[in-house]
Length: 75
Image 1 (cartoon, rainbow, N blue to C red):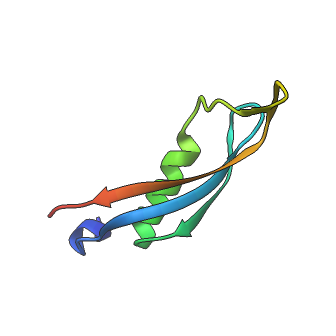
Image 2: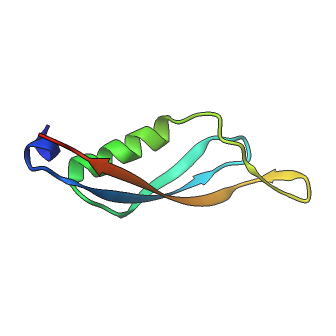
């Protein structure tokens, strides 16, 4: 892995939406660390399932989230 070879580490900050049906949509890297780590963070969030949507007046709604994902790779 190129990131491990280069001893890359840090926090990738992602933004994404959880739709009213609980699916993840529109994942974007807001602050990247290393290209392959950024891609992996996006892959993991896109593959996640079972999000509980936000509610407004009892109705499920689309909500934007921002999350940091930390990477600490050792040789």
